[in-house]
Image (cartoon, rainbow, N blue to C red; front, top):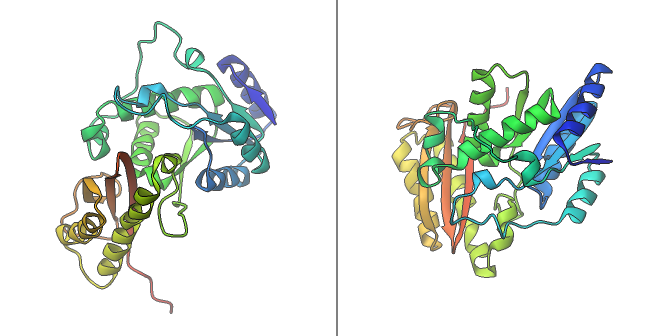
Length: 285
């Protein structure tokens, strides 16, 4: 497994692979890998000849009062896990390599970036789209794999790729969960034991809403209320609970098969996000 730290070396490596007829899969990460990341790496390995994992804690997507400085980091641990999952290259640039001074350019997807998480984190998605564009330009992948836990991010990146005619396929993979249903996240390490226990109410509420939809409930507000009841009972603080169209992220008052219920809530001081698709169970013939 190679460790590459500069954009120039990464581009030279990728161009050589592509010239040789090989396809490149990219899994962007901020490190502190968990089984969710590993599932993306395995999928990337299956989807291409060369698997590149980027490891970069991106300061541009953190707000001034957010957790950039304390975000968990452990390169030795992450590189071992990446290697065991079949990663061929870790692209591991530092901040100066990614944002050489004076850095003046950013990428922003209008409308979608101001919804949901964008209401309370107004600069977040500009940081995400900018760094992902830079990673695509450095790694030159034919496809990139992301998790559906960050569903709004997935929709925004697909829009960016479409709008800017980028020759990169964006793949979204299902959420990997803990045994009690909590969506895996590097930020789960911040949770106290009590907050960790209460955080499982998010997935519980989503499951209850999904089951209600499958039984015939199509009113978006009522489905939101089911999730709200569960997280309030657990003492979590709601940021938002919305039923949205999966492509536009606009509210879906009457639910169709293209809707998804999305949640952001605080367990103690830790902000957690999660979502589930609202889809009918297909009956076996």
